[in-house]
Image (tube, rainbow, N blue to C red; front, side, top):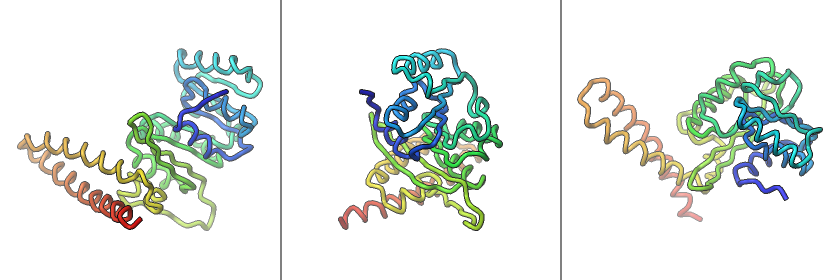
Length: 241
């Protein structure tokens, strides 16, 4: 039986049943194999940019005898896909700037998609701002904690004519408007972790006397104050349960 991590299972649950999928940065191709074996998708393309993980992905597909339903391709991002070839794209386990760069470089493929599912390892705010600016709406968001790591997973669909323009504030970009709205049980812990990290950065910046550094300190302090208020609001909700 094919077992997935909680992170990969969460990605799989966001994929609409019957959709053709491309998994960018597929690694061992566990997600494509799961999607086929569970009859979630009829056809999956796994993409790897480097030969070593590409060979690992091919081996996994062969191991489960799924070569007819899973194609593993060697190449960069969406460049190996044709417009309309898949309906859903998964980009997981990459930094936010890398995800945006991949999406930016293949506008024709992007325009043909119904859904994007992303899991940035860092800089989630960059990805959310990019999606909103390019006409995508958040359909679902999930937050999981696995192996001492928080993972934000974002599902987005193309904005339909007449749906209006959606904007994000700084907190929504960092932690997700849907996660904040439902006061996700893990969100307070993620905010607390980030605040601790920024506090360490402030400690290092405080050692410098440069004017530019002082401006950065003020910016960090203002940002931290907004997110402390968010954390307090999240903690208040816990107290009411």
